Amino acid sequence: MLRFFTAGESHGQALIAWISGLPAGVAVDVEFVNRELHRRQLGYGRGGRQKIEKDRADFLAGVRHGRTIGAPIAIRIENRDWKNWEKALPVEDADGAEEAQRPLTSPRPGHADLAGALKFNLHDARYVLERASARETAARTAAGSLSKLLLREFGIEVLSHTIAVGHIRVERAVKWQEIQAACANLDSPLRCVDAEKEAQMKAEVDQALRAGDSVGGIFEVVARGVPPGLGSHAQWDEKLDGRLARAVMSIQAVKGVEIGTGIANATSYGSEVQDEIRYDGGRKRFERGSNRAGGVEGGITNGEDVVVRGYLKPISTLRRALTSANLQTKEALKAAYERSDICVVPAAGVIAEAMVSHVVAEAFLEKFGGDSLEETRRNFQGYLKQLDNF
Ligand code: EPS
Image (tube, rainbow, N blue to C red; front, side, top):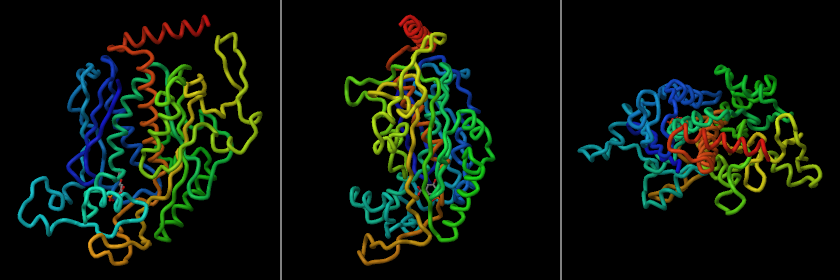
């Protein structure tokens, strides 16, 4: 069973990712993992924190001689900012520690501050925001990059691009090669395939920055090469669309998830929405001329690209603060402002690649099993033969 957990506070010593259930023998390219971490740090509209951090994966366990060994994997990612927070967030209580604390007592509307403070009975939201912070997603990216490496062994590639920032949206169909090019270009400001739209998106970010505001948007993750038959219609919690939605919705600031063109489909006729079926005798595969279903029907992959979109609200830390109420005195005041990002859509896309990779890898291992990569490969090849002879 493929699982991962993360630990770590935004301004603590480090983030930790713990991954269990990968078969033995998967080649672990540490530079690939670091490149994924770097990609997550990029994007026009990121705040000052990314100038401090240079995320790198320090493998503590589970990888030897460049390969997984079937043991749990532990990864540590250092928080360079910790040196500025050691006094505010010490592990052990010490004299003067209370004065050094940096309390947050005016909760930001839209952030976890208030709900978390009420839940954990804290009159300072510091501990809540430290863990609610999207800094945690660096650990998810590291974990998901291992799933990506497993999927690559079977010809499955997972990429993402930005579809919308604020009011600017790419409306046209986008080719896989365009997404590949956008992902390969680490200088791309927003990882958008359309240069003209990207310039307009940058202007949206600039406008929000000037106004002390923030902007949201939409990213799209595409998984190519996924075989038909992952996930199951048989039980609600086995359906792959539901599992993808949960994984992507769990990313900070994501408030909507769409599979394929699911949202537009809701206001179209059935004949306009379903993807007609044909058989390619050469490839010996069923296929579609369109992919509005986003590669999943009945909670099962159908062999087309798996397409998942995430809708991000604008992040909740605003320089032009909204009205709030003090957690201690209850008096009305402006919400707290901490150094923050203005736009995180491209970063969220990278994180979603990691989450989608995890869900697809989990479903892949459910179907094909295997304690070693060779065993998984044998089982996978047997299934491909079954599809050829269907
Ligand atoms: C975040 C606030 C900012 C972001 C952070 C998420 O951090 P800081 O308060 O240290 O400036 O930069 O994201 C990251 C650090 C990251 O690596 O993604 C928040 O409140 O969620």
